[in-house]
Every structure is written in structure tokens, then in C-alpha cells.
Image (cartoon, rainbow, N blue to C red; front, side, top):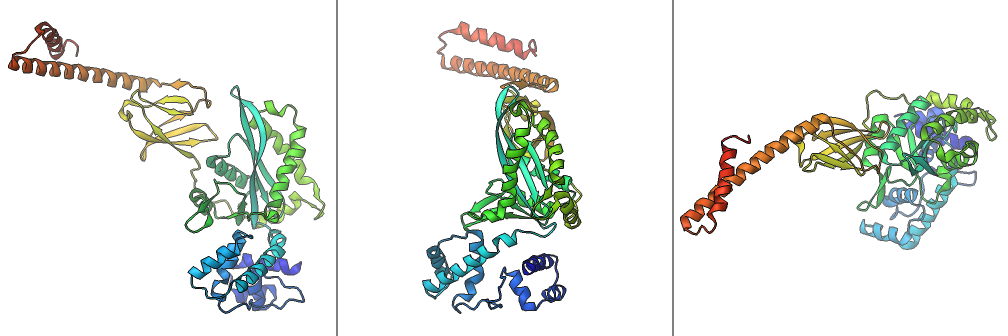
Length: 434
């Protein structure tokens, strides 16, 4: 077990910029052993340490093969062979498949140990579904966000009615504040708000917005390996624990608001944190002392987690969002605007490009209601009156042109009609309606 912990410590020291020779000195091991630790090679007494021998033809591609298998343990050997041939591999299929089998065995053997992390290194994130609840007179889906620290097993949990990305990022911010710091890396399940599949590179990459968020807060986002339950077991067990322990303790949970449940949850988590963990003989709070020492400080500055929403202003001076309509000034008639929606406050800031316009308070989703603010109503009425005058002027000018054309061609069939139109146009022109 000592070797495995040294392996993890070697990786942390390398991330902190410590040279391999210095890592070897601190861990009191040979420099070749440090190489093995950093490449996830933990040897028993029967195994020969050092660099893998393998085929000389395969050596240039071993890093590529190992990286691909770490991402997908059951990646096809035939597909790997075709890809390597395109890259210049001249060896046989048998050599490749033997090496892939060796890599799979190594990955399996260290899977559990790799994710038994040192303090402050890793947290795991997942969503749980908790049925439906009544909100604004309608049944809506309820979820809970869960972030669990790998070392201490301490958790932050929050009930929400959405799993969209803005909610995910907002929950992260509150989890960091709850723990008082940020782990080095965060492990995610298969969620599209965290990772996207790049078909060109044939690999999963962090969502650009999550990557910006991670860069601001200083952690590395990582994706769970498929069909590898050891990598996300801690957070999945916690999801089950919430359903089996907290949920049954709440009476009439379907009629409770998320705010009520989150308040009850704080008390429940406090009790859980004081319980002894049988495998360690310590409580989560006792182990959290070491986590807190290693967590990174929360950086200053504000990261805007609000959800961008495209908005189109109609000819009536309103834009639609979730079946409701909201007014804007007449200056934005027919324009495409952008809204930044805050899921916490249910407010949306409206922008024309980079120019801020106003902030609206959102109505309940599906209410099919409308908000026309007084200042917007005044500007819209003024624009409507101006448009009506312009339309009447155009009608007068058009009637005048038609009359002149008819007179020139000497084909006036109904002169009284033209006289009436001309008379109305003349009154407008003289300012009677202006």
C-alpha cells in the first residue's frame, strides 16, 4: 500500500513543478522508480521494474495506445491497428494486441488505487434525480447536485429543478465556498454540460465553458472512464445514500420547495459528517482537516455563470422566453438581442451586443403571461404614432402620384374617388392630423 501512496504523491509533486530527481530524493526511491510511479506502473516482487520492453516497431506509439485505453479501456484492437498503420506502424497485429492486453491489465490493477486520492487532490461530481414536485402550480422535475471530496468523503449537496450548465457552474461555486477551497481535479460522469465528443480527434474534450470556468478556479476537469465503476464509485454511493437515508426522513417531500429541502439537508449533512467511517475509524470532519490543508484557495474576481439566451424583438416591441413575453424600448424593434439568465435569482440581463439595456424578472415558466413596462409602453406608443403618420403621408403621396398618372393618360374612370383621397392627404399635409 505504501508504494501506491508514493505513486500518488509523486504525481502531485510533479504537478507542483518538482523535478524528478528531487521527487526521488523526497520519496527516498530510485529515479527509475519515480518513472514507474508517474506512468502508473506498480510492481510486485515478481515483476521486473523499469521501462516496458515491447517491440521496437511499437515503441513510438506506446504513449498513444496507453492514452487511448485510459480514455476507453475496451477500444477495438482492429481500429487501433488501422490508425497506427496510417501513422507509419509497420509491425504485426499480434504485437499490438499483446501490448494492448498488457496495458488493460495494468489499468485495471491500479484503477482502485489511483482513485484513492491524497488530501485535496480530487472531487467527484454527479447529478441525482428525485422525481417531481409542485412549483408554480405545476409538477416539475427535481434533481440534486453532489460534489464529494475523494479523501475525506465530505459532500456538498443541493436540490435544483434543472441540470443546465449555468446551474451546474453555480452549484460548483457554492460547493467551493462550502468546503473553503478547491481540489486539484474534479471528476465528471457522462454529462454533456461537462464534456463533448470531438469526432475529428475521436476523443472526449472538456466543454469550452467548463474549461474557462476551470481555468478561472484553477482545477483540472477529468471525465470518468466508461465501464470503470471504481473511478466514480464514491459519488455514486453518495447519490444512493441520499435517496435511501435523507429522502425517507422528509415528510411529504413532493410538496416541499427546493429551498426547504436544502435547509433540511444542511442539518442532515452535519450529522453525517460526524459519523465514524468504518474503513478509516475517523469521521468525515476529522479527515477533512487534512483535505482543507491541501485545498487551493478560492481566487478573487467574478466568473459569470449566467446562461446566454438568444432573443428576437417582435414588431410589437416584445421578446418571447419560456412562453412569456417581455417588453423593450422601441429602439430595439426587430433586433436580435442576448439575455444572460441567472438561475439563482430568476433575473435576466438584456444586451444589444456589448451594450446593457435592462434587467427583467422572469415569470414562471409556461405562465403565458406578458410584462409591458411603463417606459417601454410610452416609447412604443410614440413609435406607433410616428409610424402611423408616416404611413398616412405615404398613402397621400402614393394617391397623388396615381392621380397625376391617370390625368396624364386621360383615363380617369372614377374621379370622385381620387378627389376624396387627395382631400384627406391634403388635410394630413396641412398638419390637421400631425
